[in-house]
Length: 357
Image (tube, rainbow, N blue to C red; front, side):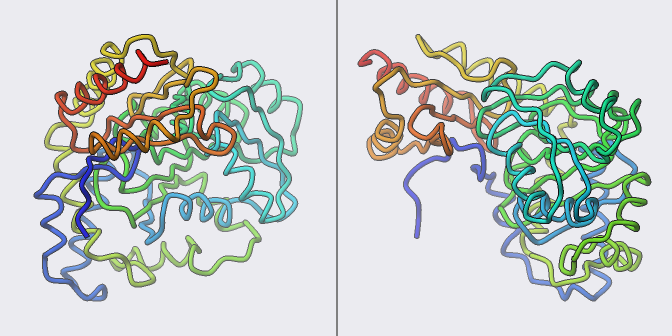
């Protein structure tokens, strides 16, 4: 089946041809030396993107699988965590924690609004039961970019473990794992890093490793203790998505040839270029990510219908809102293999719809 439209969604994304062609390489057996070389190269490239010296566990799962793995390995039943939410994906941390019998405290403001840092510090200073803080770098549902650097300092100063979902923002938004005091990061292949879906990963520092050893939670497929044992032999404990690993490695090499700081700059330029060409729209988040632009629909206008028409008439697929935002916003991703002329085309199309409102 061949699609007849271009993806302007915030993941999965359009990929460059040479990344796709790596999927045609011969498949390796995941217990042989050649696979270990591929895995070692992948981890090396990923550390450059994350700015970290910590261990990285490669998972065959979506980004949500990596989120669940973090909770299984870091939070015991009935332990309390603080969840800082900016949208649907921040709320996902809370929902997974509940499923595993954890207690949660939550700091949540209206979608697209950032809670004050003073409130985060107050919660940690006044509640010694909170062991772990969960939040999101870029919430894909709202386009909100969090101040992870400041949150990391607060968590470090108050001796709490900070876990960040960087699935959407990694590669598009500035992010320094070690320097920003982020203890655990989870990410995935199919967003700004522009590889096929199917691979996620978790980066965990020494402080997090102590939590992993002590946590009393059922875990098997996502047991990081098992991943660590196999990692010493350059392997994963279970059969990974080997062909997707090839493509992910190719995509990461392209990022690092450009340089991650330059890669951030390119995404910032794309975001600014696209937003400047939009006329009359109101944006949702107060601190927008470089990964996507989120447009509010005027009262009485259904985003679902507009997205469908744009796909059918112009061969461009945009993203709808989620949960309570469905039909109320349009999300336009500017990650993946997109050129300025592609973004200019979508801006022109959206401006024509805005004239009809």
